[in-house]
Length: 204
Length: 204
DNA sequence: CTGTAGTGGTGACCACGGTCACCACTTTGT
DNA sequence: ACAAAGTGGTGACCGTGGTCACCACTACAG
Image (cartoon, rainbow over all chains, first blue to last red):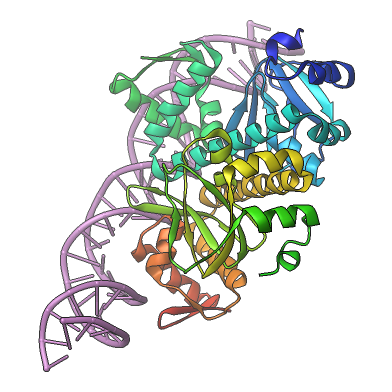
């Protein structure tokens, strides 16, 4: 894995530090890597793959945002920063390659490497925006719009158009029930916005 | 206004810089100081008073969080950082004294003053948490719980128990309609959780 | 004094979405 | 081969909360 390609915006010095001190790991898809209440020992920096960050409340879930390559987890950083437990869950959505940065180095690098510092400010800003967007979706859109937008985002994100996903999973990500998704999907289909295939959805 | 008292966690050096370069302003209550889409030229640091940060969508509002003394506005910081327009609104809730930090200094101080840097990381972390909490409230609580929690928070925040506030304003802050507040207030009253006075609400 | 704008209160209505109890079908594992 | 677990589909029901059309009352400015 060549850091220079994946993280070109970081200084050579920092990339060398990362190579020396951070652990490079491969995580298979579908693995829960952070739970609510868990204390954080490493901050992941995604190189390849996709991580999903979500909340739970009495077996009702809600997707918050995705962590894409060259991005990191603001929650981990914050948690390590204040030594607080995580308030969210994180799960690998695809097979993922990531650098695990020990929190003690993060604290140092924040001071010694301006680009490290900047990286995390940008991440915080990004997550702030995404949470805001999530709030907007929940408050101001109805399910059909939310579902359509969500499918669209996911199609673009993983780059496959007949998107392989179940109604149940969509329900979890939108914090609703499976029946609701089935119902709304049919509506979107009659409106010619999507087409349904066995275990997959095609965006039109 | 003595910065040493209000901002004891900042270094003397930084406090002196603030005193020299930032503008000290008094803003009366009820004034809109930041609009959606607006570009940010100064970052406020609240010394006294209270600022409300909220979103709008087609004359439907939603309170996001408050900025209390010794706190700042993550949105302003982020906006200045990326030179992006604001995504939120901010209004003074009480008469407010604040330091206005020109964005060009913020960029410099982020590098030269570690405690300035830390301050804004903490602010980002705080706002992230608060947005997350807001999402939880919207998704997982019904109006009665949301309203009760909101009144409670506000009572604690402004430190007055028969809280002077109208149903209309509560409706705006919770992103709902006035009639709904009236309805739910009656419910809370019969449950002996609150008592209603003319133009005021008492938390029991 | 009177109009205007602000409070809160109320009943009727209804749409959205959450829930329940099913069903049929395919895929998986033993 | 069969059970088990997962898929999506469906009709009925109903509660929350959003909307509308009112009403009564108070405060205040002209």
